[in-house]
Amino acid sequence: MGQQQMIDKSRPVRDMAEWVESILSRMTLAQKVGQMTQPERMEISPAEVRDFHIGSVLSGAGSCPGANRPEDWINMVDAYWNAATEQTESHLPIPILYGVDAIHGNANVLGATVFPHNIGLGAANDADLIERIARATALEILATGVDWTFAPTLAVARNDKWGRTYESYSEDPAIVTVFADRFVSGMQGNLGEEGVLACAKHWIGDGGTWNGVDQGETRIGFDELKRVHMTPYLRALAARVQTIMVSFNSWNGDKCHGHGFLVTELLKNQLGFDGFVISDWDGIDYLSKDYAEAIALSVNAGVDMFMISVEWREFIRLLIRHVESDIVPMERIDDAVRRILTVKHRFGLFEKPAPAARKWSGSSVFGCKDHRDLAREAVRKSLVLLKNEQQLLPLQKQSRILVAGRNADNRGAQCGGFTVEWQGTKSSSQIEGGTSIWEAIRDVNPTAQLSLNGSAASRDRHDVALVVIGEDPYAEGMGDIRESDDVVVQSGSMIRGTLKVLEPYGQSLALADLHPEDLEVIEKISAQGIPVVAVMLSGRPLVVEPEMALATAFIAAWLPGSEASGIADVLFGDYNFTGRLAFSWPTADGRQQNVGDDGYQPLFPYGFGLSY
Ligand code: BGC
Image (cartoon, rainbow, N blue to C red; front, side):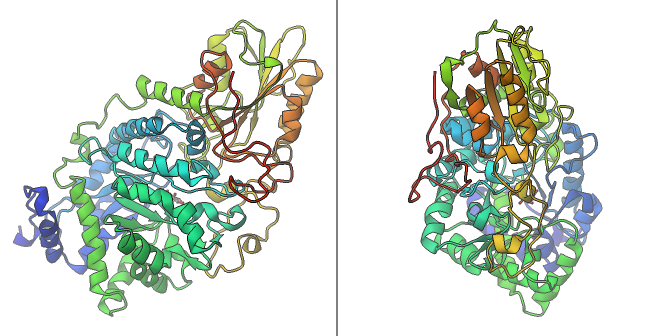
């Protein structure tokens, strides 16, 4: 075995810089560029990870191995790890990082505890809860042998039409900022065997896109960019977040993926970020129609690792060519690889055994009762009571309850996007464990009756009806609301590169337009003289005047995840409502209003929420 391929794992941390330099000095250009490359698991075998010296592999949302059990994940990550750490004449053993989107629990995996999406956690406004959720999520990630999650999302969503609004804790940077710190601390721990690498995303201005068009254009001045969208990152950096993902959006005409000022000057030089920057999924494709040029623009702007779904071989080939022809300086490559190796070293990756042999791999902590209790607590705290006339709530446990609405018995709908599948799942079948809203009510009151379309409603048999209304699952641009197909105009006129347009969720924020069937169910039941409690599952506030007018009580439940028992806890009065709006509620005209805006007159203001 060649001397060059040995790595001494026994060096103490204080020698880290020297140690990293010693590895760097022995790496070939191909090995360095391989470290900077992160292919998607479907597109790369373990042997290729070895042969191309790959630094990281990811699972895109919903990309799951085998039968999607923790052991399938461990086996997969183990195979990549073993290939990456093989020592041969031509291969330097450098362990890989495996990354996933565990953004509300390790929710890609069957049987995981699914926590409320961030929008609900913002309403809970409990920083300690965030840290406990991050901790529990870290353990469920470690149980699958994985090292790294692309979370937290630090977007400050300023337009509810944006399909990623639910990934945002709040329209107010104050909440996002406090949570940034606690999430990163909970997730990374001390970066030892209990920790998972966090990734703050998406740098920068993702939540500020014009008209809420996903991957669009953020047209604001530098002061607002800093005040609203950068502030949360300062706390994530203080908590020593190790990785940051660049955003798909542009800032005043220039894509973040090629933005030297935002990535190198601001993030690395001015703010002192010393971890590594990763691109978003094929995010460099936007920079130029010429792939080679796109690569050069992004590497030179300061992006260190590249998430490339399919074309990773081409990426490697072109980047090597760029360095050989001085289009990308060798110092830039060294800086990127130094950062990646430093993070791997800080994370103890060189000392860690293969994933299968790690402390938490295969642990029964995955989907355990304690975590489900924690998720249930989070659900209780996230609910916002918007209306409660005639003190209809809390419900009497012995009252005769009708449960209706198309998603009343649907754990998939409760979980929303980024759950098992990228776009989420539309039934309970893939959400193992937990309870649907119907199941949670029936657990308390076995005489409750389920009638999804409300046709069983009868004043003689029902004292009250719970009607579950709202959105179906979606993710990213497929959740956008756009009035027309004129995306480029709606996203701002200055976009230069390709805009990858996904079919939007609908054309208006009005629930009566998106899902008229919900209003019909409420009408049908109210016509019988039965008072209605509307429980809305949604990734954002919606225009709901007609539904709210007919309902006697109205609860915004956001996307609560797998544990709807938390809803029953509050409905029946075992707990009080403590959730408060972290997003201003739009009026019938759908006008976007954020707390602090001139002429601020939302239907319900930021901070609103009733209690018993
Ligand atoms: C999203 C990221 C995500 C990545 C990997 C992208 O489409 O924008 O938030 O981490 O995919 O799944």
